[in-house]
Image (cartoon, rainbow, N blue to C red; front, top):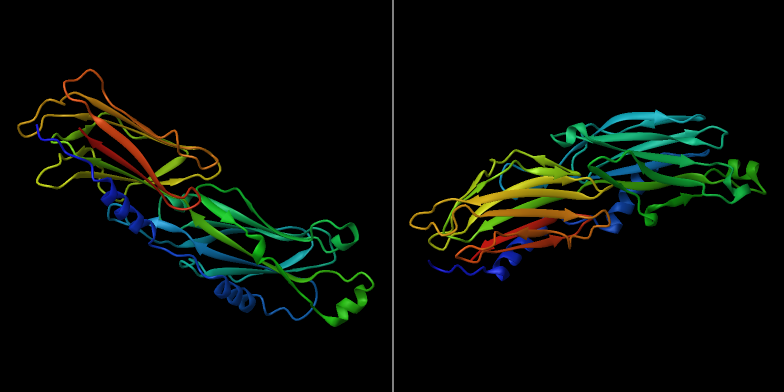
Amino acid sequence: MRRLVPRRSLIVAAVMGLLATVLSPTLASGQSALQTACSTVEYGTSMCAYVTNRVLVFGEKPGELQEGEITRSGTRNQSGNNSRFSTAAPIPFNLAGWNYFEPTWTTNAGAVISYRGVTEPLASRQVSVRAYLDEFAEFSETKRFSLSCLDAEYLVCTTPDVWKTNREGSPVINWIASPFPRMQNAKGIASIESRPLIVKVLNMTDQPLVRAFEVRANGAIRDTQTADPETIRAGADGRTGAAYYHFYRDASRANSVALSYAFVDGAGATSLTGGVLDIDIAIDQDGTTEKSQCTVPSGGAVTIECSVTMLGLADGILQAVVTVGV
């Protein structure tokens, strides 16, 4: 039987090219958008939460990621404020819906805004952003304005501190509030994102693989737009059999995906027939992936080699490349 040697350098280069598909917006453009969206306030105490869509979704082709859409699924005011929500629905990728609040004289003004995906399986999942302003916090020196994320489920909300800024506000209100001037026209930014996981199985042997059990996932939901790879063809004529699985990870907990494949007879090759591969992709809650592994059958006439290479970042796109050879 011909020995097929894995070409790891080529695999890694191809995968890294995929992971570089989408770049984050620059700090300057984000600041400009924030200033424009929150520039309508002329006086009084107010806050503006600027929510940017950075959700990536899977396409119809294996391994394909594309820009996704989100939509506002609900709003919940806290006591003591009047709110205006100018968020478009749906919100295209890299655009934003801004939410503007005018608190009355209270110490707990704010609102919770919920977002969900537009396409399945993210259409039934949501994340909430909570904007909160404590008007009189200058007296107690507690946090005055904050953005936080609630109820995240397969969508992720991030609120970098660098985006939190203040404006001076109305001279009249500042004069009334002296000698203890209150915070005026607070604003901040949040980003709604997804956490895709691509599992790619490369069969570099001369025998096909047939899935032995149903896919088992915990803390991850599968996107099923592409064909279900129940069979992975054998490698032949310089071509490698490949199977793709697409998942979205829940960033609030550990994620795992388990696959099992059995070798069946190939064209003139039967030495691996009946052997079963157990593939376990494991991402801990802290983002580490060292527990991912591939278990091969032992005691056969031919030694099977199987490895799992994790590429990408836990707070972005992850790809598990499973290489099977002899």
